[in-house]
Amino acid sequence: MVVADANLLVVLVSGDPRGNLVLQSFTYWLDNDIEVHAPTLAQYEIANALTRLIAGGAFQADKVEEAWNDISILPIQYHSLTNARRVIEIALALNRKNSYDASYIALAEELGADLWTLDSPLYLNAKALGFPVNLIS
Image (cartoon, rainbow, N blue to C red; front, side, top):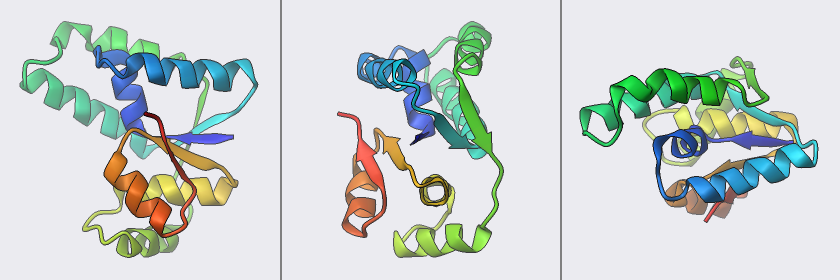
């Protein structure tokens, strides 16, 4: 069982050169019946990232529906927030002013899984504090 950071899904559909690395990870997980999970927040973060890419000229607006469909067919189990207190504790431990990354880590803890991300600073910070995080690189 793994928890996927939203950045994995954005890279997968946006044409980012790291997409092949992410595709290899997803292929491995799915081929080996490893469940993929994410907080429902991931869907909003993906929409936000695609909006920023479009606004910056790095992604075409007419590709959003196709990208969203590609993400939607992945067998990802989305979870609502169940322990806000733990999310806030993790966010504060990470020295964050928001709780977005912490929600992924809290879900990973809750499920007994590891969070997989492309975010090197998050990985280094969280790993140093003993959180279950892995970096795709």
